[in-house]
Image (cartoon, rainbow, N blue to C red; front, side, top):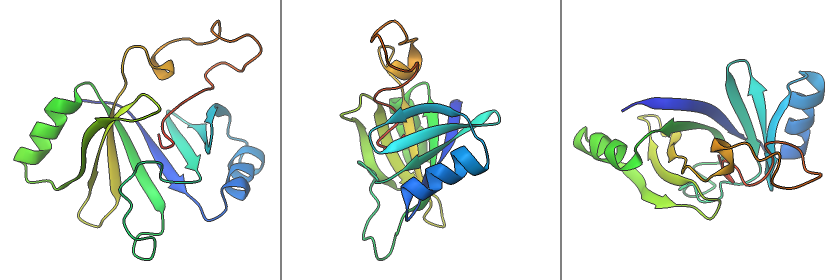
Length: 149
């Protein structure tokens, strides 16, 4: 499989405090905001701070309270699914299109860390310049990676 982009997804206990820390204390620039989440530039990568899993198969909150998620963009989600299934990786949720427009599939690593594989359709705001779409809105805002990613 070919990984095109990635980000770490953080599910903090207090999202507003976490956003303030990364924005104000560390001085990270905001790449994009969407309802329930903020994506920061993190060097050559991204950090998403989100309030809720929004589609992630997170299981029982008592056994999986949130924490870290990995967001891996691939060119072909169907091929990635086939490759991972052939390698014996347990798929937690089969590929499907999310309400926010991304195609996502969820797996877990051997320690249970959730990994979302994402294919971004050509018409999605992540793949195009949306600055001319809506007057008065910040570039790059809108539905994004998810409610994750």
